[in-house]
Image (cartoon, rainbow, N blue to C red; front, side, top):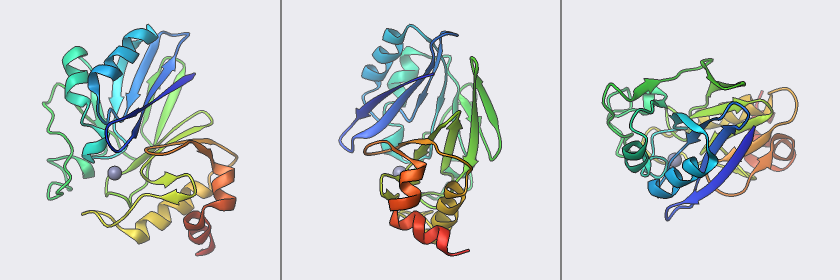
Length: 208
Ligand SMILES: [Zn+2]
């Protein structure tokens, strides 16, 4: 497994290129901006792009999507339905992209996706948005805007919910073992570090 990080756009969103280099396949997580640059990274990897995964439906995580799809037109795009333009989150001011049926895929709690020898598991972690998910692959969590280094995503956007955020953080904190954490913004971290130093996670874990 290889993970390449591209900080894209004015908000420096972390776009991840997840590869099973042995199988020659890859996935893009959160093409937040600079679609042409992401497409170049896919091409340079030599891996076939299998799918695009969105951790949630905020524009700074998908602004590069249209350009990426222009260059890789047959790629399905996954999102949790609560954050989709036509889903329960349809009233959001920050809307997910409206995709045609050829590209739109949904994932939900417990779903798994296969990328070569890798299995990607979906954890629903609402709070930052109703449809926020974390993606677990081996000992790695792509945490979107749910869990950040010593912080968590803001909950003051439409669909945000601080109590739900605390439940999601507690859920992550109670996963067994340690994980490397790749968030939607800022530097990567580990789950053990966050259990010890993240005030939001510590508070969340103390509640029950
Ligand atoms: Zn966000």
